[in-house]
Each structure stands twice: as C-alpha cells, then as structure tokens.
Length: 102
Image (cartoon, rainbow, N blue to C red):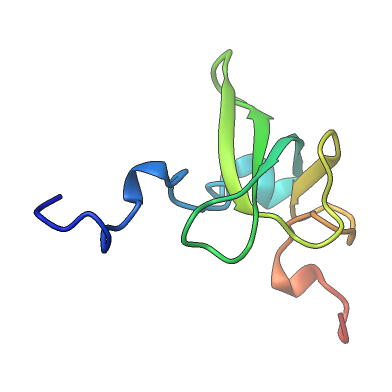
C-alpha cells in the first residue's frame, strides 16, 4: 500500500499462521490420526508448509492445521499426535516420551 510499487510486502499471498494441534484429552491419553493433504510454499518463509487434516473428536467436521513440513513428509502420509504416538518422521509426541539421544 502506498506510493511505491517496488518495495511492497507480498503479505496477501501468505498462507497463514503455523500451529500444532491444541493439546486435548485425545493427545494427552492417546493419539489423534491425521493425513497430510498438501505440501505448499509460503512466500516469505524458508521452509515448506504442510496442510494436515484431522477429524474433530467432538463435532462432525474436519480440523485443518498448518504445520512446518519436516524432511521426509509426503502427501497422503498418516501422521499421529499424542502421548502414545510412535517415534517416526512427521509424528508429534511429548518430549518426555522420546528416548534420549533422538
């Protein structure tokens, strides 16, 4: 916005804020399964983004999350979040559940 056409920020092309899932009962006592639907580029960010879809445990709807895509993540991959998730590429688990040295 303003007079200059060269030095403008392309903020209208940004995809959104990157967040992990909200810690709920499912993640504290088990795991939630999601699927990676899309890996995309976000202007102004060095790392690619992954759009992950989860089923909402309380309502009949999908929760769509934006994550930073880790190396080795691909579309169609199932990712698990929670205390009982296995230690694999793309999964999210608490720091206390990871073995030392990982």
